Amino acid sequence: MYICLEGIDGSGKSTQIKMLKEWFATIGQQVFMVKEPTESDIGKLLRNMLESTRATEDNFQNTLALLFAADRTVLMEDIMKAEFQGKVVISDRCFYSSIVYQNDGEWISQINKHAKKPDITILLDLDVETALHRCDGTDQFENRDFLEKVREKYLELAKKENFFVINANNGLNKVNDDIKRILSPNFGICL
Ligand SMILES: Nc1ncnc2c1ncn2[C@@H]1O[C@H](COP(=O)(O)OP(=O)(O)OP(=O)(O)O)[C@@H](O)[C@H]1O
Ligand SMILES: [Mg+2]
Image 1 (cartoon, rainbow, N blue to C red):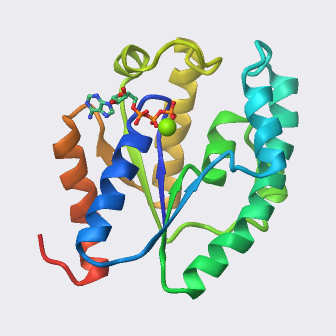
Image 2 (tube, helix red, strand yellow):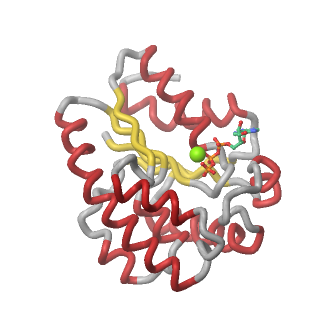
Image 3 (tube, rainbow, N blue to C red):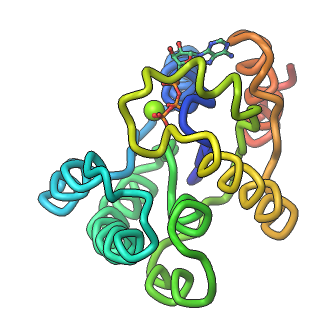
């Protein structure tokens, strides 16, 4: 099973994924953790580029979109291998992030056509004001107008692609319980 957490910067993805990893350990389920950008050479290049002050400009976004798509093709082999080994893949972002952060449209879908769709996508929906308070302000994407657009696109995509949407304004444990309630039936657990 391939599970993905999506959401704007500061919505709590990394925090919740850490908590999920511990929960899966208690139920004896092996996991394979994924984070985009990855640790590949392309991922390292991406991380450097994401620090550029031009990171939110349209043209630069196209370059980022291509690199993210390339980084994902490397990642897909690892995901398939982990699934074959019976591990649950938990991913911090996937190609859906490209659709909402980079310029969307058919082109993004085309260049990501080799990216596997997650079986379950959970959107941590958070208002931008709270997200900005939670972030440290160093990321180029931590920009009010930009994040408002991204949040709107996420909510549109959630309807189209049947994401589970969770209110990420709630406390850590409540958010975690909501995520576990979504996942539990897939692991024969009744919460
Ligand atoms: N439900 C919550 N309530 C209060 N604070 C939270 C909550 N979830 C996360 N935080 C805090 O908000 C900050 C951002 O969380 P986190 O790093 O998990 O977000 P993220 O979605 O991974 O962000 P990014 O996309 O930038 O990696 C952290 O300091 C974290 O402790
Ligand atoms: Mg994170």
